[in-house]
Amino acid sequence: MAAKKIKETGVSTFEDAMGELETLVEAMENDQLPLEDLVAHYEKGAGLLKHCEKVLSAAKERIELIEVSNSSQKDLVPDPEENDGSAGAGEPSVDESVEDDIQLL
View 1: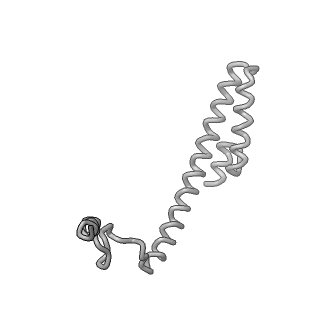
View 2: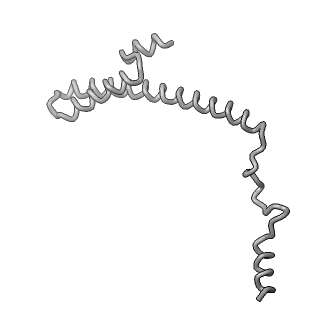
View 3: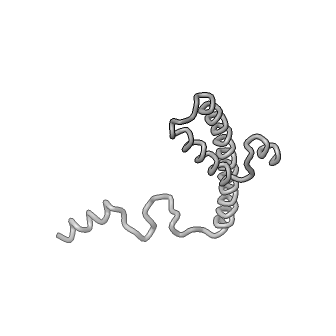
């Protein structure tokens, strides 16, 4: 399947595709190309962009798998900072501390 991607876009790496895409955009921005060449550049650029998006999507999926793998290992040890949001058993709630302040005055 990697060979198919190389044939479609003519590039083998993400960096090569981005470099070629930048070259196409620069050539199109110079306003010196005939309309047919502009359309051909646009078509090739669209293919390069699609290739880059696929590569980025695959990289993102790999990173997410790594994060899931690491987080499942992390979950084996309880995190003391992860609470359900309620005050701890030894800590007074905000209402109790306000009442204590009022009683002291």
